[in-house]
Image (cartoon, rainbow, N blue to C red):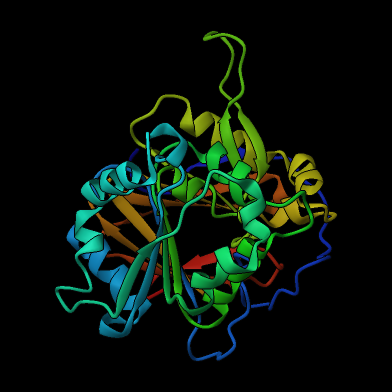
Length: 321
């Protein structure tokens, strides 16, 4: 990908926020924290292996030894694909053994899987109950359309599941996901590629996601899968389409783009960003009234902060700037 700043043309529009109350200092549209000194965090993992520093950081943000972790495997594992629920649980326990072993090793207070094949469960109070006490929620990889289908309401209505996820962040907890699990976290998500032939430019088939980031779109596998730069920047540049998807006039002009390479993770906590893992994270900011994109790269271990500039545009500041 290369470091430094790269510019691309982008479309322009207007800004008005309807539906979500956004603090001026929150440039990503994360839920407002109940305690301003304990903002929630989102962990965006680009896919592939989760390195120990990312795993450890997620557990730390969830509360360490007092953490209550919920893992949602539904993007990759469905009970309907197995002869019984016991076989299904055996499969996910094999796949996520390091997670399931966390309580026994004393690293967290509790752990459980939360899964369903029935979209009506997203509005069932009993099904959603584990999220009410969770301090950390993780979404596995797989197919992001499965998460959209099971847990996302008919926009702009949010399901109980979505509301409970936002509450995890408001309480100061952490919600993260890898690959498809990352893709589903924002309000506007990419379901899949949208092109008729290999000769056409790649574009995003966009839909509504879980709604944790209302002023940002994301892209995973950014360094390994062909056409990701095309489809990601194509959607980010299309301010009119972003306005339509969000149901708010002019939100597209200020939308931020967050793209993460495989093996890497970007932690967003309020306006503070932290890149971890193997690989880099990328931040795309709209400039010149939405007519340009500024591309910033954060290597593993680097941090930065988003802020509002003198002209009202989002800016990225690194330590020492």
